[in-house]
Image (cartoon, rainbow, N blue to C red; front, side, top):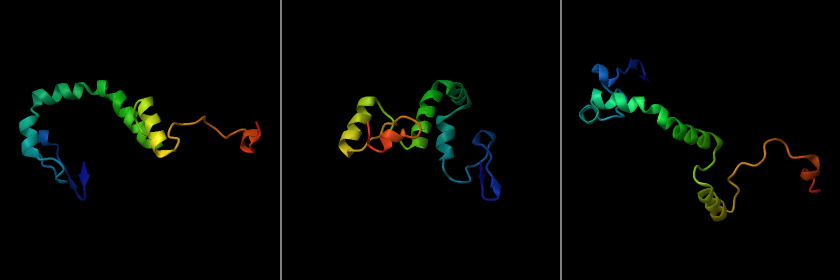
Length: 97
């Protein structure tokens, strides 16, 4: 991680958090090498959830069950689910059936 002109060294290598985003003493106490390794290996299990969050954020859409999203649509009186992709057909765009 680069912050300004300094290069932060990961705490596992004895470095410090130049951006001061992590309380390193607490981090080192709670996350030993034995605990950190298995957590990192579980990353593939978390990938689907992270991808869903990323996709919803990128699309600007809420993430939740269909019932949850329907409730938001009703409350805000706004369509939040994606429609059909592409441009509407000309007849539909003019209000014809």
